[in-house]
Length: 156
Image (cartoon, rainbow, N blue to C red; front, side):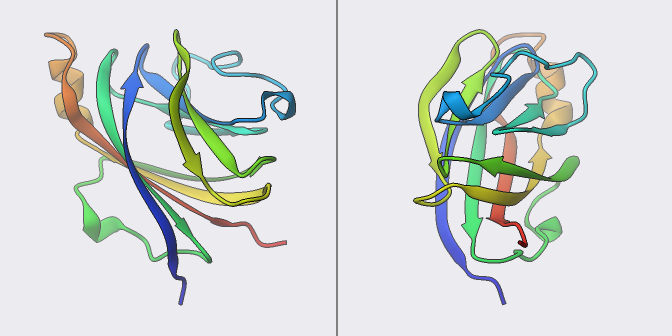
């Protein structure tokens, strides 16, 4: 059975309906966020060294819970009222990801996956989408949309 290695909780500034988790070693990311990001794209899009995540609200502050596991974690269907989910594989050359916004670039917030780079599987869940879609038209809501992101090493 897989074991949880690390957990992080953070706030994510969302703008233009999205954000990314991108390797901190920019020299290893062929196309930096938000380049290549497409309107109407999928909820989760994996690219070399980055994960693009589509939000339901234009501009707001979301919460993100990140988990790093030593193997495939149990599915989290019973841990929230998930309105969207996606799964992908990607490579993180450094083992550390920065949170990127569309207009502001990298935030001062990092996720540590491992001390070395490698290939990872990731599962992303999201709740609060319908409510943030409605509230983002009226202002800049905080903590309505919540993401659970689970990482584990990809099989060799």
